[in-house]
Length: 318
Image (cartoon, rainbow, N blue to C red; front, side, top):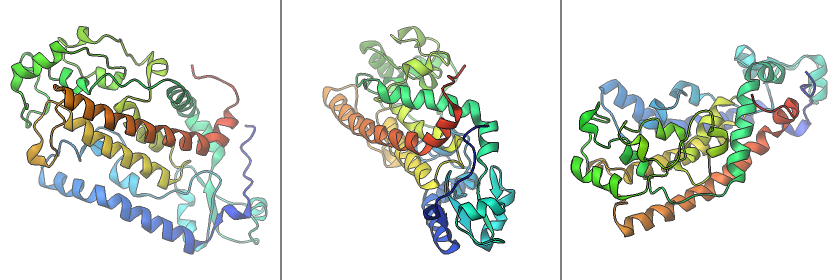
């Protein structure tokens, strides 16, 4: 496969003292979020905001705790030997050691770009389409978080969602908010959770098939999903970047639920009352700020993945 040869500048070779320090810092960063979740899970408790990134997304805490330097970085030192059997890692051979400026017989590992490209090609192709396409579209700020309200519209007729949470305005009041507002959700992975009665109220028709043309950078869920694309392309991305996406998603989730129909006051999350003009204005203000932050992260993801995207050529995702 063209473009997969491992050529590492000496500046991208990390001695064990450096990379072990980064690894430890990453573990501390993850544990701030993962440890409380694991404690709640052991105790059989739920949290509507702070469990989400560990239950909705497929990346588990143990996977997130593993630190990776990303594509194009060599980890040297005897401690690196333990990684040679990790998925998508390889031990450097003699020629690769010389290319990295390391003496013969050194212990060093790096991303196995060839195997990563072979097995993750479709994921890379789709991520390139979603990231670049979303970044290029104008942001829309008129949804006001009503997707969460549509998920419980007339819910007494269907299976209750988050049955342990109270609706702030009650069932009838929640239904009126849905009926009195335009519902314009562009994100399929939010739309697919609408109650059947809410589906025809949405002015757009997002689907898995049209996702690549409908995602837009004002959408809270599209911005939360930067974390999904980041971890799906691990270990080719540095874990610090993955965690930057995680932490943005964490904060977006908090706002998403504050603007939801649920009463989360006792959980420490005061409502953003989007049924009022003031609440709508507050929502859009935060939505714009998150959109700008997410666009910067999209750019960083695209830049970090550029060498791998280049190895894919000009083929488009099928």
